[in-house]
Image (cartoon, rainbow, N blue to C red; front, side, top):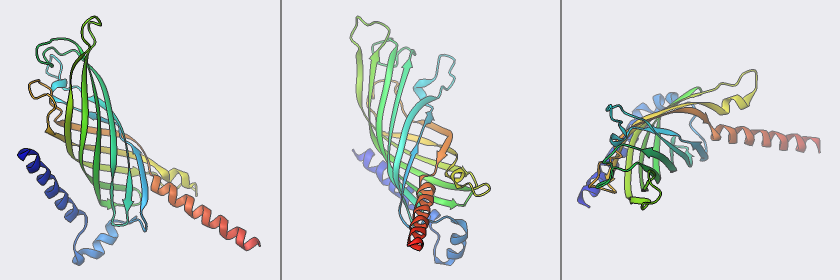
Length: 246
């Protein structure tokens, strides 16, 4: 527990440092205004898919080559006027592993399933109209299960347990501009995410299982805050036209 408390304390120190980077002091207020050109005026809902590729140390094959593990996920939270996001993420992975000796006292091929939930804090360093850069801090709790897949006649479940993931990452998004007044284009873009995840609590200490590792993600992005802003503006214009017609 002492190691867990120290790790959690380290995360809070990192979060404070990230906040200091993303929110300059009053002497730099003018620079901050220029840097964050799309600072929200009200809290907005944020929802996004989050498919990541992780590199676990136990996922290397016999040739000692790193193999990316596909982890599916989604995040939902709030974008606040102070230009940072807070929320939760849900993740799932289903992987077949044939590497022998992963589980103690067996060389069986196994299926690994991971389920975990994280809370995240993501301050923006820059939030321009066509791109944005932010720092991601995560802390969560998860469940893992390993099942035999080579011999149905034998006991299927080999191991299970809980783990506590934490992570630090950098997110960079490119946004589509409005072309010839067609605003729906600006709801979409491309996101690049990369970082490192480390485990504060292992689920099976006696095995070679280790979820520490690098991760990256490249995929389409949908900016829900832009969509809701455009919808709100369209609704207000519609109400104004109806009022003028009366």
